[in-house]
Length: 344
Ligand code: TXA
Ligand code: MG
Picture (cartoon, rainbow, N blue to C red):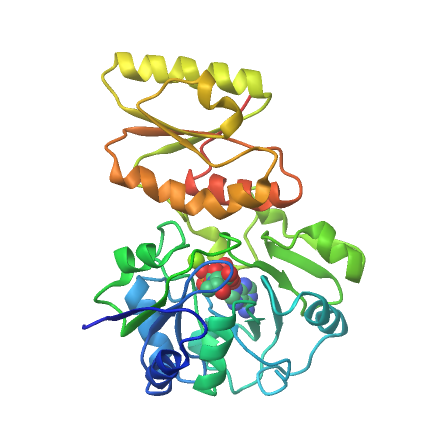
């Protein structure tokens, strides 16, 4: 397939209209959002949405998020639960996906046969213009080949999807860098199914007590969100995450780098600015300062992909205490490692 690539921003309305035309015609368009790039199709067009699954090799049982540009979502849901309304008013547009009871207008392929639908209004202006100009909601998963780290730059999208989609637009790096927080609002209690930039604490400020799907903490539970059961975000080399007191983590990494090197292996380390000078390794990558979780989140997927350009046999990554935004960061790191986590 011929893929058109337009490096544009939200002011380039002619090109955005051309992309909207592709959506209207049932094609696939990769576009930026503030979280990660999305692989979009007309959410009301079953045939178009099926192409999304093919293009990224996504399992059929993993439902898609429907992206909207207007608060009037009444056509797509059976009703808007009270707490969902409060969340929409407080966090839209922005990185929060809300699951609500679906209407019959949303095809089964989008929701993987579930009777609920995930809806989000992105903050990114280009994304919202694309939705507006298309005149339809846009179903979009992250624009990566299934299993790979989510794309936070147009280069990542080109790497994964060039030749598999009709158009790739954008250029800016994603501000947030982690996918949206996904909450289930179909019952009285709000439940976090996927942690993200909007934290539990942020949500509790507006709707009171919020619950977390136990599957996020422990592998013994079946996740409520089908997508959370798959290994995700994986770099090509095996990844091990080491969490604990910083001094001990540094010692562990140093010792393991030394042992691996003696076996003739190349080791990469994924660490933070504060310990860059303390560790010697073949490839050293910093996520940013430990004091700046926003930067660490924004860098994470890009840095994981960086190792794929090297010949490392193993990646050792620092782990973080799971609070605030670090909960989402650790969730992605654990998934990327296939739960290869050492706590010391
Ligand atoms: O930030 C984001 O959310 C990005 C951008 C492009 O908006 N999109 C994204 O989509 O991350 P995706 O497909 O990679 O992840 C969607 C997640 C999956 O874990 C999926 O299982 C879950 O949302 N999901 C979608 N609909 C659901 C539903 N009705 N019930 C439960 N989980 C649902
Ligand atoms: Mg994804």
